[in-house]
Image 1 (cartoon, rainbow, N blue to C red):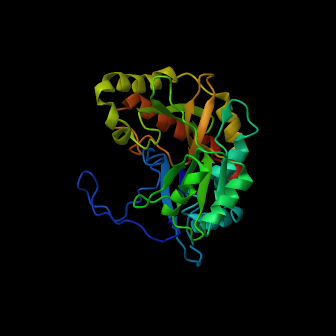
Image 2 (cartoon, rainbow, N blue to C red):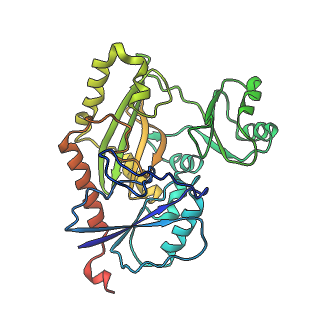
Image 3 (spheres, rainbow, N blue to C red):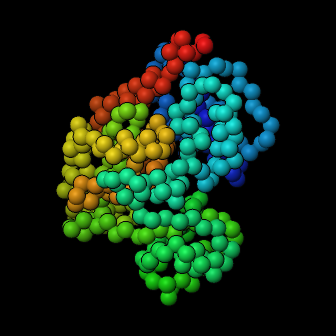
Length: 337
């Protein structure tokens, strides 16, 4: 039996959503939409899976368990900073092997990720800077010092659905348009905007998974809009083309079934992470233009419509997760040393 302790973290606001039922009507006490279901399909006769939730309280939490592996799913360095700090302390204070060590999670922050990607060949990322302005002049000064040129994508670091979270600044004469955002010291990112349209006028957003030493195709989404979150939003303007769109998106899984990108193995080593999803596009040279790294990305996160993945593809994903966990588990000799 392999025992896995999953670390989860409350946002810094210490607020969560309480849901009482799931899709089948079964009673649920708490449901965290941002908590990765990575471990849920594991065989309970072979894997014991427990969760530990970190909040903002300073008092230590004692857990009467000796896990074989700790899976850190606290992966948002902007919204869960306090929980991530506590997880980093926990990692320094115990000998257990970690999936996605908490100390390495801040490396996926867009500004830091840009620095890690810059030395690598075969992958690029739009130049990104982080700023915490208190006025529009603060924004202007940071942009001037960073030498970013319009168009510039300006977005809030910790995004919330109810607030405007991004704007494309076409030229510096329109800088006042950024006053739609609150300049109260909260963090923002400014990056070079990459219009990644293909020659047919459509945007293609790819996802790949790095799961231990395994690489798997995640998905392809086509859209006539550059900002892509999921199938539902991306496909709204493509109804006349849906047959060919869906065919291409599905073909992506077979096309990359046996292919891999060596650069993703190099990126994994650079970041010091075990599991993550890569959000990117592929240019005409076959190189990756990286947009973000998501350590909680998952086949079941709702980005793709139900039915996109076959039973076999889901099983392959789960087997890769199991392989990663077993390879991370220390040998009996190490475990009892």
